[in-house]
Image 1 (tube, one colour):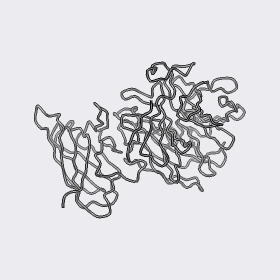
Image 2 (cartoon, one colour):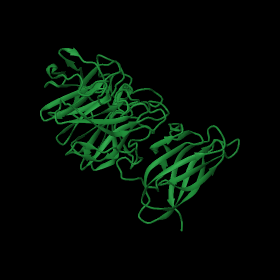
Image 3 (cartoon, helix red, strand yellow):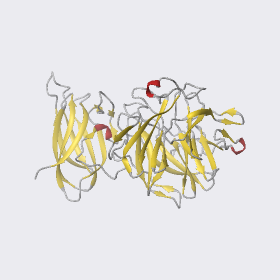
Image 4 (tube, one colour):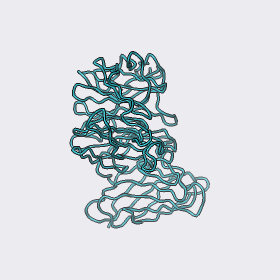
Length: 448
């Protein structure tokens, strides 16, 4: 069963209750398709099924969930899909899709280290006839497959620590062992900090490897948590690949952020990077995110992007009520979670903050009234900054012993706002411990 969502100019760009990490975006027949794993809130990495999401290239505010596309167990029978992976009941990890001769091939990996491919006549599945990926007659092992179609050739990359590659044969499930490359890029000393999540794409005449990276200048291999999507380029598909830098870093979207995974895509005349961010102060509960990026195809260069709350859009509309979880940066140990159909920022203590990038306040300077929907637990204050300038100090307190968890609407006025600006809320108190939960914010033009 399909579901259609009007998500607006938001980031994450799917509804907040949908957790899709490891996003590989592709364009087929005028639609953008997002292929990824599927986290379940409160669970760990991924689950036993995939869903495919798509949007028209001319309307990236409305996304369709095409329903289950492949399952590795029978637990989703009531959703109309049975076990389609005969050799494993492992969790379905990061996938990718490529089209050939009217068939769409879904390449996938499982938590037991096996990799496979299934196919469909539709880009959203369901995908059937699953087979293991073989090379020299033996199943390969590893994670995170990616496939690049380059003319009549199909290049398959996978691996953790080392990025392997080989060409697919015409049957689309066996690899030509004579073309096997052990490590296009690597995490070894002096290399590119490759952790996992390879995605091979083209930038003009350049081959571009996007990947989850451990790279730091001080310690190029094993530098830390792979929160960055870095890239390396080459004029030759087999390299050597030159490390170029970072496309996006999801550090700060959640205090327990651990990894990243995604890719780049040009939609019409605009390039984007698709990636994910954790929530719930865990490595998991990862949501699909996107940012506009600047790409120099001639020279194989990508300018690093900043995390925003607006994603596909240039800016947010300040008049729209915005769930707290659309914040793109949190500090001080606070985090976004899910509870009873709401998506608040919780565990707010003195010194915590949240940022929303960016709101468009229009050409003419004006005053705006801001409302914060809070559940106060103690007395505190919210300092609101716009464009780095303090604009309001809003005090809050529990409504009383019996109603201390009641939702409170706290208001302030932001003066002289214009143009595109970041809105940041900093929480402070003389009291220790948890102060409040933030549920949503809303702004409206103040009456003159």
